[in-house]
Every structure is written in structure tokens, then in C-alpha cells.
Image (cartoon, rainbow, N blue to C red):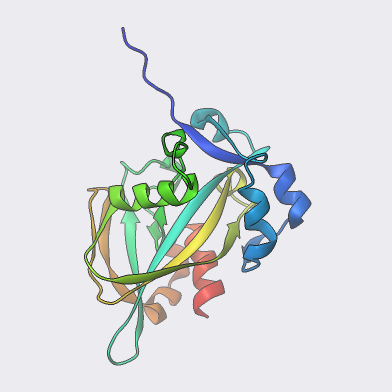
Length: 203
């Protein structure tokens, strides 16, 4: 009988995050956190099932938001509903504006494991058939939810030339670019990280 391999994911000690300066919600102070959080001495790869229940570590998650500005100036954002096959069961049926996932030990052989992990997650989840300009804009921390207590989000905005982003997974449902104004009108439908990003980046 073969053993199923347990995924090992990139984590940092929550104490290190607190040492740098704890915050709740969104922070744009990338220079304060990122160099230290990604310092080799501070990161490790640990079994994901254990980390999902251990708030003494934060799993680092790239969270990519696709943004498109229409010819009339309307700003739209790619959003979707999480299906039951998505990895985090506590987020099923929630709307989201972020694509991303865990950095795996499989990414660790690359020169930049974080960038490689983000690229892999995007390739697995969506097909980007347009030019884009991506940049890191901040971090998300949400200690008020069970999911948030064990994750730390790194928020990237990808400005796409055309709204041509399509799901590769069946569990990324009800997709499309929606005007920000419409998203802000009903924030309660969204997962907490998306609510935080909508408020911090689009209001």
C-alpha cells in the first residue's frame, strides 16, 4: 500500500511577523516586512495539514488580483466563486478577487521559490491570454478568522491589457471582470481577504 505524499508548504514563525510589527487588515509597507519574511533563516517547509491548525506559523500565500480598465475608464476586477474542489474547505462558495495558493517544497529548488510558486499556482488555476504588468502592493493579515490566523497574504495586482483571464479549474466558477463599483456594493459575499483588498485598494 503506497503512502500519499504530504504537501510541505512555506511558512514563517508568527513571532517573527509580530516582531516586525503586527497589523490587522492590509499593509502597504512591503519594505518593512518582505525582506525579513523571505530571509532563508526565517522560512521553512512544513506539513500543510499540521500548519492549517498551528497559529504559531503563518503560511505565505501569493494573492493575485487581475485589474482591467475599460476604454470608458471603468475599472474592473476579475472575480469568481470558489467551488468545493478548491483546497481550503473553509472558503467554499465564497466570492473572491484573488488567485493564488501555497508555496510548496517542490518550488524550493528554484532561485526564487516564492516567485516560482506564484507562477505555478497561476498556471494551475487560470489561463492568462493577454499582456499584463504585475506588481506587489502589500500584505494581508486577518487574525479574526480561523483561516486567517494561519495565513499571511502577499497581494499582487496584475494590470491586464485585455480582460482575457479564464479558469483552468472547474472549481473556479462564475468568473468574469466586474466593475469595482458593483463589487463594493455587496462586500459580504466575498471571503475576508477579498473584502480587505476591496476596501484598501479600491475605495
